[in-house]
Length: 73
Image 1 (cartoon, rainbow, N blue to C red):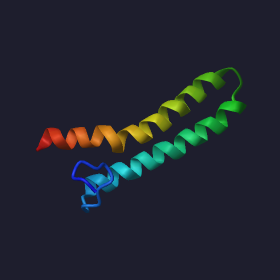
Image 2 (tube, rainbow, N blue to C red; image 1 turned 90 degrees about the vertical axis):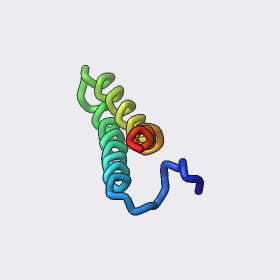
Image 3 (cartoon, rainbow, N blue to C red; image 1 turned 60 degrees about the vertical axis):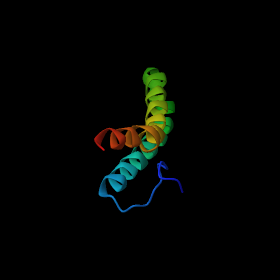
Image 4 (tube, one colour; image 1 turned 30 degrees about the vertical axis):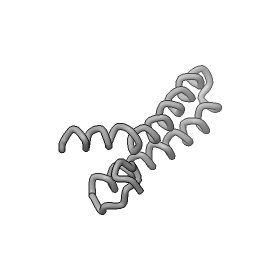
């Protein structure tokens, strides 16, 4: 893999924490999608929150964390 790969396995605790929280966001987004059909009038808002959570779960490890790492060094 190239050195710019967001999925590098260099043993950094920051990468592990970022991947863990991205996984939690993804699971949370799926839960929000499921709940959105049972909350009545708030359904569209809960569904939109699910979309945002899933989008962030992919954005954090692929764009946000590498940009922060590049800024530090």
